[in-house]
Length: 198
Image (tube, rainbow, N blue to C red; front, top):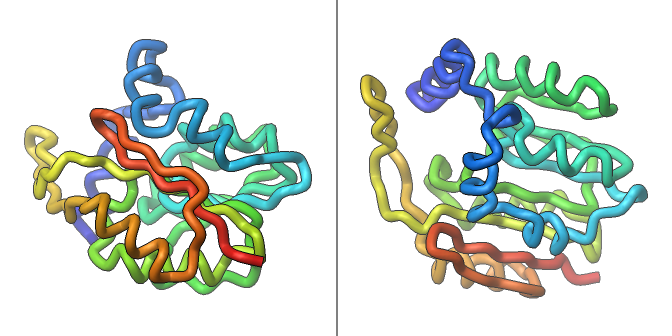
């Protein structure tokens, strides 16, 4: 995990902030979590939201104006500081820490994560934890990278990845007690929108 933290800290030092990506790069990223992903979360001004792996706030800047409260979690100190700057206009709460080991005091109406599970070894435990943090009827929206790369090669930095098996993740949702509302694949992403039963 230390190498992952160092990598994302280094990206901030290199002034790599996806909140300010070019329109072409933003369109590319929509292949994982575009407007359909956001729409399927059924956000509204009454809902509390948690993002797992919020990064600098690339998705949060689109989500925050739609909801009552937003909490983001990320493991990179420099990324968290940048996210706080980027989300300063909102009453966003950005927490430094590992989702898997953090203790949360609140429950949420919506939890979502995109392009983070490639860093999670025990994906079923992460899904189970998300379930435990959701209010009854709450939604968990997950977008995972479908590439089976075991290494993120960023030139001078190489980071170990834990590829996502979409079919296994889909089963994990069901085995953890979720009802699947929607699921789809693109050429890059596998998406599951699921609900904790009331």
